[in-house]
Image (tube, rainbow, N blue to C red; front, side, top):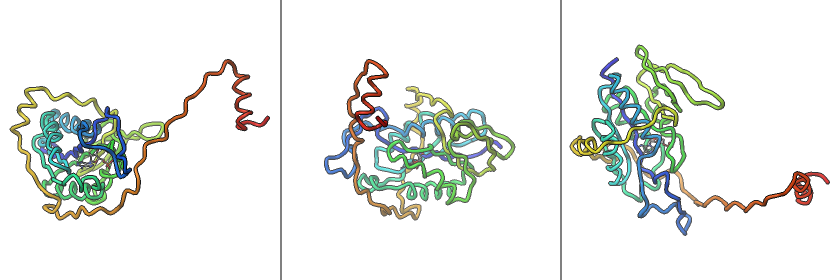
Length: 257
Ligand code: AMP
């Protein structure tokens, strides 16, 4: 099964450590001057692809990112981690704000066909929109089997054996190739790109495309009505005893008196 080709989705998102601020007009969140990075689940996806290459299961890793010019930084990180080449599907900043999982899924599915890849891997979800849809939609568009929330992947003959994180446990499934899988947190611990690899990554091929090159219309299909910060939590108070707690709960009408 050597010689498989793998396509990895790498989304540029606001860094997980940044405190998100909502725009005053509530149309979205502030992105200007804010640190961005590769979606953490996508780092895990890239890491898994690189490990598969090290185990000689795959022979080529292609990274793809749809979004504004700065997505190329995310792609360079993927290349420094071990991806072989990258495709940047350029979408201007305004369009990117309304780019939806179906748009991205159509682009990824088309690239998967054109590049004749055997495996598509995406993160289980992007930490900005929390949609958890793209990988599943790619599988549906290609009519390929999918193994979502993967926490362990093993190669068997012509198939992948995948352990999936499900509520309260793990499920093990086999999927025939070609297939789509989405990475969960426990799949692996992504490596840091070393300085020599960051330098080497600058010379790896990165091609620029547009959604039109793949025949995909990225007109928004839904409208964001409002984005709000979570309600501020009320301060709690310390009580001296269980009796005091019961009295307080009675006073608040939360338990019968
Ligand atoms: P979502 O369905 O938005 O939660 O995203 C799930 C996964 O799809 C992400 O972890 C990425 O691997 C991939 N993905 C979503 N949006 C993009 C994008 N703009 N460019 C590349 N990959 C993306």
